[in-house]
Amino acid sequence: MTTSVAAVVVAAGRGLRAGGDIPKQYRTIGGEPIIRLSVRLYSVHDEIAMVQPVIHPDDGALFAQACEGLVALPPVLGGASRQASVRAGLEALASRAPDIVLVHDAARPFASPALVCRAIAAVAATGAAIPVLPVTDTVKIVDDSGRVQQTLGRSRLRSVQTPQAFGFASLLDAHRRAAALGRDEFTDDAAIAEWAGMTVEVFEGERANVKLTTADDFARAEADRMMALADVRSATGFDVHAFGDGDHVVLGGVAIPHERGLHGHSDADVALHALTDAILGALADGDIGAHFPPTDPQWRGASSDRFLAFAAARVRARGGEIAHLDLTIICEAPRIGAHRDAMRARIADITGVAVGRIAVKATTSERLGFTGRREGVAALATATVRLPWSAA
Ligand code: MG
Image (cartoon, rainbow, N blue to C red; front, side, top):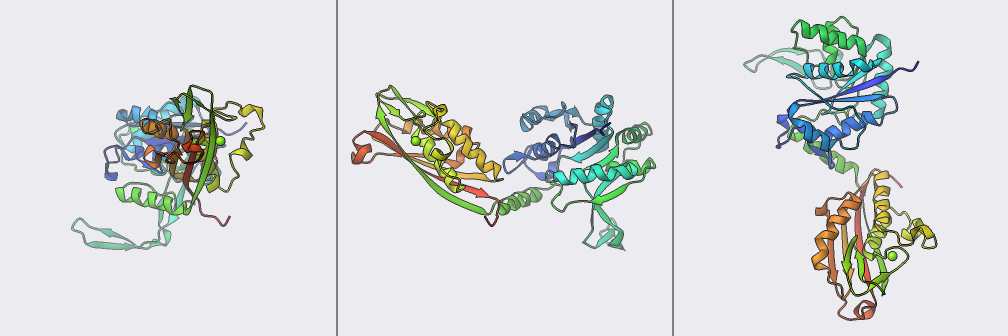
């Protein structure tokens, strides 16, 4: 029989020390709420069978939005303390009776899949295991008047992280007994396990697995992420399509009524084609014709949002992000200005880039050349892409 492992992700606190007007679990790092990063760590992990989020009673709508599309059990509501919230998560899993449970604080969004594997491996020895790091700062006990009472020898001190791993039945039993006796002082689950007489094993934690608590923690995490995406590249894309018969053109993903149409193998959206090539250029990953050959009948009349979404997905697959997109459309007609914001919104939708990072501009060519003679539309795009630093 295979061992079934559940994860309880605890996100029921208010987290007011982080500042801002929403609880810290719902603040974003790199555009993603930290609770989403924490739930996803478990929901996509091969060794985890089920994920039980525990949230604050006021946060139902925030949670639904933050974790949309992730595979997890419906959230349960936490209690007045972290201890009560973990117990609520364990009780919700009781009927499913997993063999092992990992308890994780949502405020630690950078734990790695490898750390989850280590937790599961370590719990086998005694039924309770926690990730720890050696303490490198000197630690002192200070009295209420702010005076040092004692300096602790740090060689045996460890700072403790999550996920903490336990035999499910033993941890649930320990929580139930503590609650029945009104013992509510425990700040982590290992403390309850210790109180219940379990032997708690330690395994190696991760420096990157920090708990985000203060506004400063969030600022540092965002700066660290930017530092890691240090390979900043800009590239251009250019495209032309000719006018032909028709009653509208598609530009920037928006259909615009016009006395002529644009001809091409796909929907002939020059703007999205130029953007697609700019992004592929930043990746040094060929061009639109290499990925979507015009000789392939499946792209006849295709909506060009597919090409652009493909290029954006190639960036994400490399662990990168699109920092900025800049588009210039060159034609005498139709007039672009009235459609500018609709195009920006559509491009944001297709690429997942914030609309404030998307520029759409238009110009004529003063009646010169093929665009000036109204024979077609040209588009020029620049993409700025951030990738994780590597030698390649
Ligand atoms: Mg084209």
